[in-house]
Length: 480
Image 1: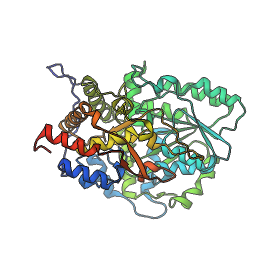
Image 2 (image 1 turned 45 degrees about the vertical axis):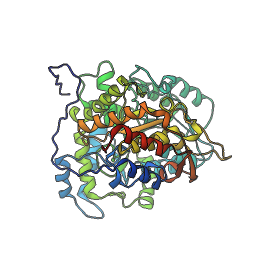
Image 3 (image 1 turned 120 degrees about the vertical axis):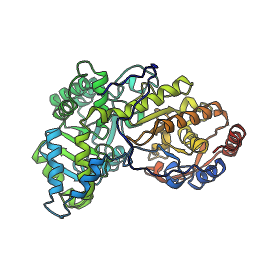
Image 4 (image 1 turned 180 degrees about the horizontal axis):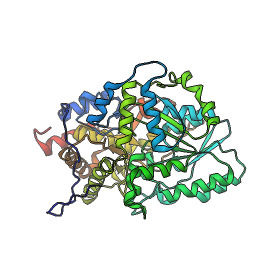
């Protein structure tokens, strides 16, 4: 990775790219932001993008493409079957991961659907380091059960441990020895719901050893592979000078199945499943035309597939994979210095605010992470994502499981924001923290039974949003 130090000694992330295409942004007045938030049912997913100044909702499908990716899109082969575009993508995946077979899907959760449809049966269990919303929904929808085996330090909010995403291999062995039917073991490279925390190669080898001992299938969610590659080079002893491509191959060699969302890995809209064994490939293959599209496009645009091929190649560049984590670390460190409670150490995907501490006066049953997301939009036109109790779903008996963490995730899509925009987000979040007592809770007025955080609607428990807007106007005057 390129090392550039500033004479001043400041630790400032430096963009290793230049901007060549721009998109105009608009920042609404604070009063209009209150109205927009309420029109969206206090759910940032339902905001109109035209009303958003900084879109930090997700890194999925919104990363900046390179010039090489955009030019590759002009080479796409539109053939329905036998497309040369498919061949180029499949060969690139084979080159990087060393797996013989590839099944295309339109995105990561489509891959999860096919994997769960093939492997999950009623009463089976899927142990994992930590669940993701859609992966859990696919498993439970088919009568399976998710068993989280994250090591205890993974749920520590503040820490200096570099790999808080590690799975407890001893607990996995104990579960396997219990006789329960394990559909497969799922390992997420970069635990999305607990701060984008990475997993070490040493831990992956431990997991592989348990899987070999008990004959278990090891499935990797590699959507956040790019960030995890960076953290292995930075934090794992012995890997500082190992080429990125060699680390990626070592990760893949330890797995049986590897699936990904190309909206994150590869920076275009698509996804897929890489498999080592023909028999399992053949079991899943028929589900691609059933759910997705023909076997050579799987619901993807061939233009996006060409961009993914180039994006995967660029992911082997240490300068590319460093950009997200470096900017995230800068944001997290700056906010911690200002007293804002953050998940530490900084992980991948985005900066994660500890809403449980930030809004300690708001009970979990009033969704503090969701309330904080609404408050930050009002304070700055910044759209983040709730990752807490609102992202869970009710138990069959109607009771509500409380999340281990209440996080406001502020994603930093790769190569999208300038440093001044990041500084703006730091400023508005700092102001909000200083006025946190004004923020109240939320309650559902329209609650879907599954994946409610996507399209459920809520309302504030008091007039706290009007009070927050009034304080903003008093402090900032006529500023937006």
